[in-house]
Image (cartoon, rainbow, N blue to C red):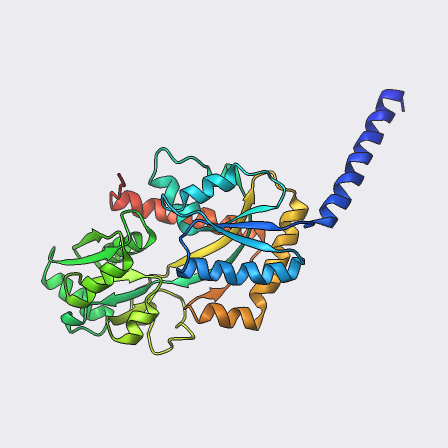
Length: 320
């Protein structure tokens, strides 16, 4: 070996030795988990459940920082531009990674290029709710009513292009009904109008409380199986409609983050997801824990992107 090759080999070996201890020591300071939603909602609550448990796993504080706005894009853009050192993470969602790219032509981040998937941590199904004024009790009732009154029934969502809007559009397409989408800025005000009959039905990830209170009528849930904390509510599949959809959340890191750090985080999150205590806490909010691998999470993101791109194009959904 000549002198130049020998020096290069030593440099490579030294770099490997330097990287090894650095990754092994991770984390040696607090981690920031950016949540692109406002405080108090289900997504924020589930994020904090995992953040607290991750802090215990890694023996370092995990600080939740809410950066809400622009359909999760403000928080996503912030993390995409953060150092790829494992100390700034994003609790992304299906909206962030698999829906926004097909709705916003000027989106400031690229889900494939700018993030390293770590692990999907939780999934919450959508609850199909109807106004009590309709006097219906099942998905079959809703479809029959909508077909008898084409173009007269409406459904609400938190805004055009949001996942509840897309699920509503998919439901209309699969059942062959003609229903009008009504976007709201506030889920609470949409619920008031649903109760009063000004809105006829809606899909939401936070339907447990209004259904239990009787303010709305629960017709079904979009999960594969019944929700453990609301076993009396049948799935849409049980009622003959093969529609499965969830609002999923998962941790991603800035692209370029060390694979060793990504794997360490993924392993920790998988252990957390299997914890009976964490499962119970997430189930209380109507969700399930997942904890998959980075590769599995990447495949899910891609599969969901293809699915929602098709829905968006077929329903001609656009945002201003």
